[in-house]
Length: 492
Image (cartoon, rainbow, N blue to C red; front, side, top):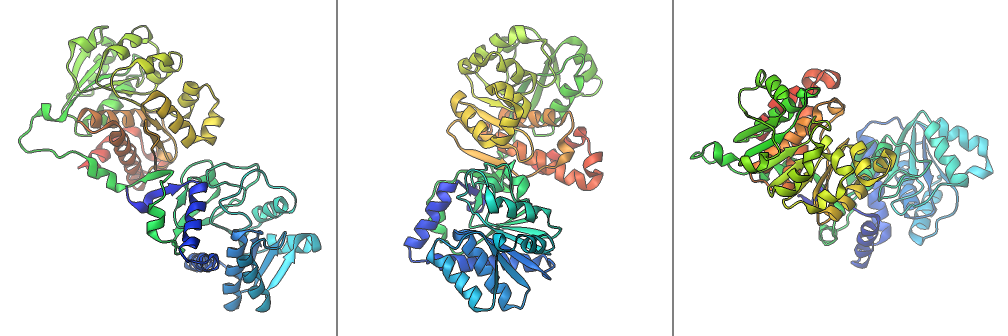
């Protein structure tokens, strides 16, 4: 993964700042650079600057705000700074002094609560520089009031580094700035790449403030963002080949009530370069799919299926209901190929988690938040508040690749590495989209792509296909069965 696509934890961001200062770059220089980047981002968006209010905290984030106020004041912009307490560090205090010496206006909410409230709510631009990445806990007192006033403003809201009320590690307090634009410094943080924190950031821009790249590279990232480079991991397709060269997938999918799941996962697999698909299910389901697809080998399901068939990967779960619960224990434990488990296969594991520990081959699980909640015995809200933490902890405990689906899908590996996918849109919020994804990932795994790379490639092209198709059909009009053909085009 490229360096530009990593994200750091709060402690790592603090470490990077400390190393930069130790290398001879002053904190005041970093503040000035941060303010300059903020100002350029604001100007590029042609935001109405008729009335600007900058909310300044007492730490370094507040210093960035005072430095920005200096730049705006220099250019004749009607800017006012609002503070709660005086700066606690010398560099921030110097920028405040520079701002005041230049004729800047400094306001304190408690000195004129009605007046300050009117100024904030009527501003055309509110800049949030109250708290940075070190924030933890809950907002109280004047800071809470300022956040509420900012959110009630009709103006554009820009956050300095990270919206107040959110920690860099993605924890969200009861009250947060709801930004239209967040200019985060040097590198992404967990909060700027995953929900729920990302929902408060608006558009996110990563700005270079002068911390040397070698310092940032020397710090282990919290995770990586999946981008187009992931396609470099696709295996070559030699000219001298046959169907056996590109893997065989055995797929236990579908049921009489959900034959569409079998169809969608099958087409997802076939369009992703698979050499041979062996589709197994009950006879009724197979009869339906035979009328839709010509490519698979159709195999009526039996308890001895894994002994009777040769395959390089096994997909289980898409639309199977609870019809196979009595035989899944033996199926999972006996086979030693890579297994991709989705939907009802995951629901089975939720009540038989010991089976996952006893499986011999490598495993990829692809739960949505509800299925993840069942796996870990928590509620959906807990999962959605802690997406990266849940995915990483489960993958490490059960030695599997975990694909936690949703907006900005999280992929976690057994060794704790985390990857976040940025492609996709609400067009995927339809029944059947996950079946296509499971088929794509299983197809790639059957072709010999490692489980982690198969998962990352799969979620990337799945989301990218939806982004492309949204332009043609709109988010409402795109259907899951539109995805496989576009995915095939992207995989090339």
